[in-house]
Amino acid sequence: MKQADEIIKNLEKKLSSFDQSIEVKNTGTVVKNTDGVITASGLSKAVMGEQVEFEDGSNGVILNLDEDTVSIILLSKADDIKEGDKIKTTGKLLSINVSEDILGRVVNPLGQPLDGKTKIKKGKDMPLEKIAAGVVEREPVNSPLKTGIKAIDAMIPIGRGQRELIIGDRGTGKTAVAIDTIINQKETHAKGKKPVFCVYVAIGQKQSTIAQVVEKLRETGAIEYTTVVVASASDPAALLYLSPYAGVSIAEYFMEKGQDVLIVYDDLTKHAWAYRQITLVLRRPAGREAYPGDIFYLHSRLLERAVKMNKQNGNGSITALPIIETQANDLSAYIPTNVISITDGQVFFQTDLFYSGMRPAIDAGNSVSRVGGAAQTATIKSIAGKMRLEIAQYNNLAAFAQFGSELDEATSKQLERGKRTIEILKQFQYQPLSEAFEYLSIYLATSGNLDEVKIENILRFEKDYHEFMRRKYTKIVDELNNGQKPTEDLIKRIDKTIVEFKKMFKE
Amino acid sequence: MNQIKKLVIASYTNNKLDEVRVGKIAKLLNKSELREYIKALKAFESKNTVIVTAADSKNKSLIKDFSKLFKDKKIVIREDKSLLAGVKIEDYDDIYEFNLKNKIDNIVNFISE
Image 1: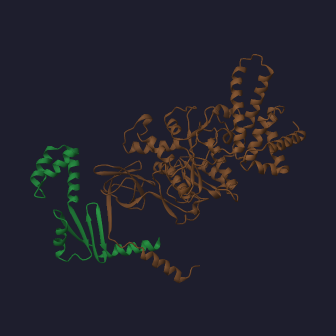
Image 2: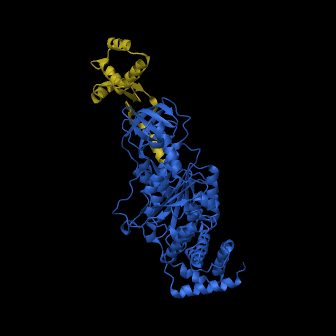
Image 3: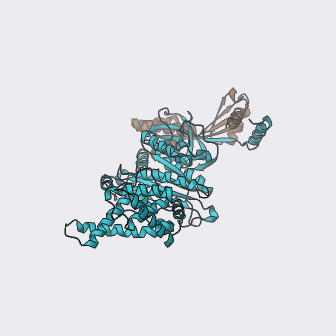
C-alpha cells in the first residue's frame, strides 16, 4: 500500500506535466457507413493514419484523404455508428502500449487483453507504422536462430534477423513448424544465453485454432516469453490488416532494448485478403486478382522491419517467419511470388510429401535460405554439407532407379543410404531437438551407422539412442551443444557410443 | 461536383445568399443535382458561420469582438450555462475550447488515467 504523501506527490508530478494550452479540436460528421468504412466530412486537418474518436467512444483510423471527405476504417464493430455522428481527431498516430507485462499475454492488435487478465501495464507507446531501420544501423545476419527441426537447421538454417518464408498448402504443417520454433526458444532462456522473445500473430484464423495454439504454448511453458496477437476470422477487416503491424511494434519494443525477437505472421495470405477487402470498399483501383496496387508495399514494409541491429544500436534483432498458404502447391501465384521476393528464403511444404509420411513435409529442392548459412554453427555446418550432398545424389539416383534396371552394388548402397538419411529427417510435432541431438541424428545416417538398420526401425533407433546418450553420455551432449566443430577425438567417442548402443538395440 | 461548387459561389451577392439567384439556379437543376446543390449550400453556410457558445451571452460586445476576429464570417451567439465560464468557438470543423467546463473535464480525465 502506498503512503498518502507518495500518492499526492505522484499527483503533483502529473499536474506539473498537465498541458494547459488551449484545446483545439478538429471535428467532422459521418456522411456514410459502408461495411466498416466511414466516409466523413470536415476533419480538414486530419492526417493519414491518424486515430479518430467517435461520439460513442469507438475508434478508427484515417486511410483516405479526399477533397471534401475522409475515409476511416473502424477498429470495432460498426453497427452503432450512423449518419450525422460527430468525429474528432486525436492528434495521435495509431500506436500500441507495450511493456514487459505483455509477455505471456494474448492481446488484440490494439493491445487490449483477450485472455481475461488485467490491463497491460503502462509502458511505451509503439507506433504501428514505422520506417524500418536503415543500412547504417544494421549488420549482416551472423548468429543462428535454432528451430529445433533437423531438416531446417541442417539444410535451410535461419539466422537472427532473417526473414524466412514458410509456404505450402493448407494442412501441411506450416503452423506446427512455427510453433515448434517458438517452443525451441525455451533453451535460449537458460542462464548465460541470449534469450529470444517471441510474438505469434494470428491473422484471420478460427478462434478454436488460436485457442489450440495458445494452449500448446501454455502446456510447454513457451507462453512465458511469448505474446500472442489475435485478429480472428470474426474480427473486422481493419483489425486483421493492423495485426501484423501491431505484432512487429511489440517486437520492436524488445529489439530496441537489445533483445532478440522471433515473430511469426500466421498467415499473410489472409492479411492480403483483409487489405483487399478494405481497399475495395475504399474504392481504390483494383489490380491483379482485385488486389490494390500497393499490395507489394503492404508486405515489404512489414517484413523490412525484421532486422539485425549492429552493436552501436543495441545489437537486437527481429527474425520474421511469415506464413503463406498456397493453392495446389502453386508457388507462382501473385501473393506467394511477392513474399518470396521480399524474404531471405523459403521453406516449402509439399502435400505429397506430407501424405507419404514425410513430416515435416519440407521439399528440400524448392527450399532455400539465402543468408542463414553464415549464421550456422560449426557443429551443424560440419555435418550438414555431407548430408545435403547425399540427399541430392539419392534424388538423382532414385529417378534412374525407377526404370527398374539392375543396379550395381555401389549405387544400391547409395540409394539405401539416401533412404535412411531422408528417414532420419522425420520428426514428431512439438518435439524440437537441441543442436547436439540434431548432430547425433544426422551423424547416425551420414556415417553409415544406420545402413544395417531397417528403415521402419530408424525413428525408434534414433529415439532410443538419444535417450541412451541423455542418460549415459551427457558430457558428449554438452560438448556438442557448445557450437564448436567436433574434434576428431569427440567423433571417435561418438562412434564408440554408437557401437555400444547397437549391441543393446533390438530390431 | 466542381460545377455545383461554382453554382454555390454564384448564389451569393456581397457575402449574402441571393434568393433570386438561388431560385434561378434551382429551376435549371434536376432532382439529384438539386439535392447536391442544397448539400453544398449547407456546407458552404456552415463554413462561413462561426458559432460562439458562451456561459453568459448577455454581453453585447460579443458579436462585435468576434466579427473582428473572424472577418467575412457570420457570427451566431448561443448560451450554455453548463460551460460555467468562458466560451466555445465552432469555426466549421475546428472547435476552440476556452471554458471552465472543458478544463475541469480534462483534469478529471487526466487524473483518472
